[in-house]
Image (tube, rainbow, N blue to C red; front, side, top):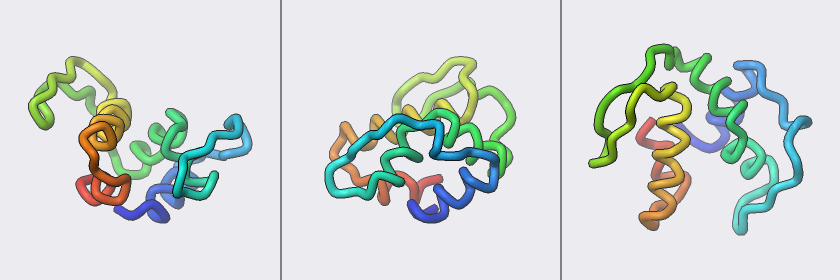
Length: 94
């Protein structure tokens, strides 16, 4: 998935960036920061992608217990950024 596809799916799933405060991520347009840091955008993408069942397992050596799939993926993005990966590299894994 690309950043553009993520935002398109978030909008398709009912997310609107108009409810988000102004956020800035160096090197990315504000719309990207709005989407990637908005739990409601992740929920909307999950709705479009069919992420329904609670996740209970390991991902990349980290244990996620009884979490909504959109939240697991949001945490995975943060973990990927902390590991030095780019947003684009992480989204390609979805």
